[in-house]
Amino acid sequence: MRIGIDLGGTKIEGIVLDDSGAEVARARVPTPRGDYGASLRAIAELIAKIDPAPHLRTPVGIGIPGTISLATGLVKNSNSDWLTGHPFDRDLADVLARPVRVANDANCFAVSEATDGAGAGWEMVLGVIVGTGVGGGLVSGGHILEGGNAVAGEWGHTPLPWMTAEEFPGPQCFCGRTGCIETFVSGPAIAHQHMARTGHNLSAAEIANAAATGDRDASKTLANLEDRLARGLAMIVNIVDPDVIVLGGGLSNIDRLYANLPDRLAGYVFSDEIDTPIRKARHGDSSGVRGAAWLWPANGDEPARA
Image (cartoon, rainbow, N blue to C red; front, side, top):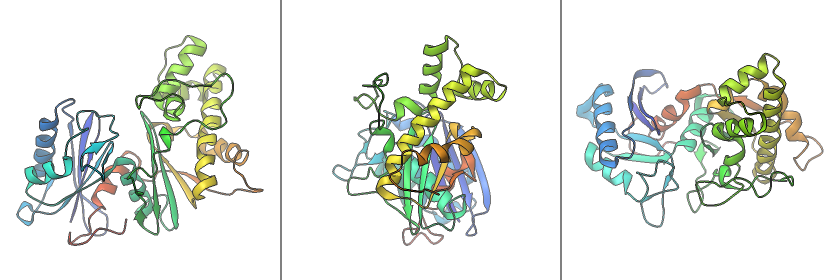
């Protein structure tokens, strides 16, 4: 058995998979926002609810927004700021009295899709989260590429490439800088841009629905999203040239992205041709928690390949 936990800003999801990847159990509880200790206890209670064999003390994989600093052993870069600065993996292992492996939630998403999702069978898989925030993960040969500073895949906190005069210097980001890709192509950013341009206060999902019914203003907002998303992805393709790009997060449910992004991407990538597939995540919202479960092999002795 494998146990995975996805610690999100609003909910904590747990899953148990058997060795073939089939789901054995699943449950969700609300995230105790702003309360570190309560978050640890909520995870422990969730695991107690879904674990079919608690006496075995099965290791737990967990995806978090942010990552564990290699320098300090503390959580860094988390937009769930009550986690930042804590030795989350050690504290949770103490609470659970079992081994814990922690990874960035976007890395978990990439692992899931590379293992048995839309990227299965490809050597280099770029998993991209485009939702409330923007992140990503790289899996090569079944292994997460975390990098020397444990920040590989954080493309959402690089500047939007080829900014126009109207875009420069870009909105302020929670990371303290301006012009990050996340401030242009996340769900909240899309809603803000649409409001500023049209005066209509719509969510990203509502904008997508309006565009699908022929609303020109909504279609223009999505066209801007497609162009900016293509620029950001082109930068990654120019550097690592993944075999496949898998989209996840709320904006990945906008079907027109898969029709329009490839041509837009080709206009920015430094190549005479580009045929990188862009696919929708097979496991949808469950990819993060499934990837967390795959962080451990079935026996828990060695790190999983993906």
